[in-house]
Image 1 (cartoon, rainbow, N blue to C red):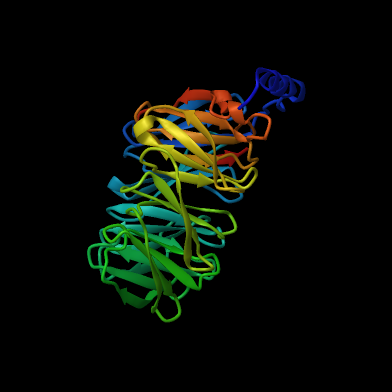
Image 2 (cartoon, rainbow, N blue to C red):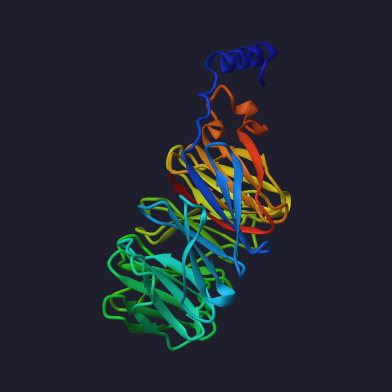
Length: 374
């Protein structure tokens, strides 16, 4: 038990040490508002909305240019990608990649966008310099999602046909088709590109495939249906969540094993892994909260109340803030990562909302965001 004297001493120590003062981040957070058919621009140096850019279709995904102050918003309904200039805060260019573009990723070299189309079923390259469709890779089945490897391959999950297509980007063609006995919920390459992780939500399992041969390496059962994932920056840990259990599974892809399953709040959803400090932030939409796990010891570090329906979580490049998109309340909660750290002297305070920095209204239905430095 903690004595009154010990509690007072711990509080005094906290006051004496204090927390370092928060500093502004020199950049914008571009937030895709699906219901509002717009992209809100949040000034992270002042933590307020600078402007809202109206689009002619609902955006579902936003990516940042790897080197320039530009952002790219994808609107699936009209298959259009909008380039937004952070200097003028306007749409500078646009390109139509297909009738129904469902996903977008940056090429491994950062020189192009690859767009996944359902109509027609194809992967389309859009070089960032010309911003015009270039290479097309035709697909034999309607795609659901895809991933890119560092060595220039694409893996496309075809949920309806129970197949996974492996394509060579440089050759613009599908080289292998893996017929599976399950519907692939999503696919992700291991960092070295040698293995591919495929999630089977209906079968509550994940399977690792050898990319070179297409053969099954191992199938790993899970206590829930894998629907969402997060990966550490070095690719050494993969985190899975989904219906069936209020927990997150920690997977070691280089050992091809499920290391352990840890409780992560009610109905865990979207996740984000941070490096410094090493945290896993887990959105809990049903309780309008974020559960924070300390990856150093897999213990619970904090539970923070946020807006209604928290979804995507991202962090600023300086590892100072976590940004939580609250889809139902139409706002973004800003958390200070250093305030989530729980030392031995402040464990009794770790469930308080000291980490909540501010909440910013951003528009109707925020679903995706990207941070762009000035």
